[in-house]
Image (tube, rainbow, N blue to C red; front, top):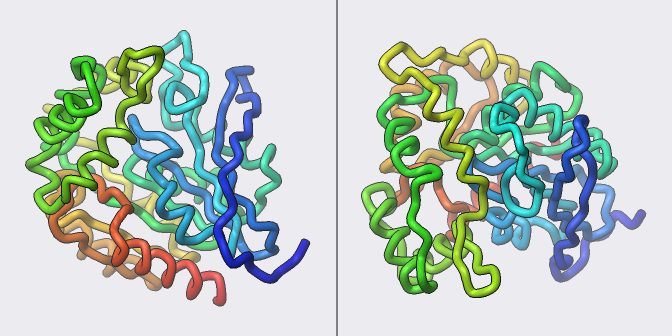
Length: 295
């Protein structure tokens, strides 16, 4: 393959493969045909590959970007057994998707749950990781944030129009996102909902609420410092929304103390999790990727 980058980013191609249990899984592939280390984007709990389009457009003129849909999200099939909406089941799915895509090493960009997957991959497939971007996630998950998320996952009313979808998005997320423009709110709504045959629905299986409902948030949430320290051999950039209620400032500071090649960036006016739409954040991630891949 050619090693010289294209002048314009490639259009994404949808690719499908089978999970270990046969469920059909989807990923978006932005492939400029270069030999540069690829980027693998892993979304949040209820999010989809579409969340990473702006980031992929910023990065894929130079290197391949693959954005994954977990089972029950985006264009991947919904699982008839909600108990399979589990980090370890999904982690095996990710490995199957990357094998199908021919990716043996990558920079991982993980938003929220995607960051948990990045830490799990450090244990299950450490050779895969060239560098990691953790988007508003760390070894300590704040119960307040989980309680807020549990309050709306799988419980959102169906919008009647795109205007209604934007209003619902603001109603649910305005305390987290205080600095979004009207254009940003529309983009967020369109990344959260989809319209099929004139009806609106979320881009995820509402049964995702069931694993959350089973969590005992009165008990201490297990901390993941051992998993985070599994990333010690690769550069790590952590993005934190200034309004985040899931990743605390104290946890971010402790991460910096424990990791020898750690950097961070706080996104003003955004909470959990930063949308990866604004130019300064995209430029920060792009610069990190290029530096990490030169090491």
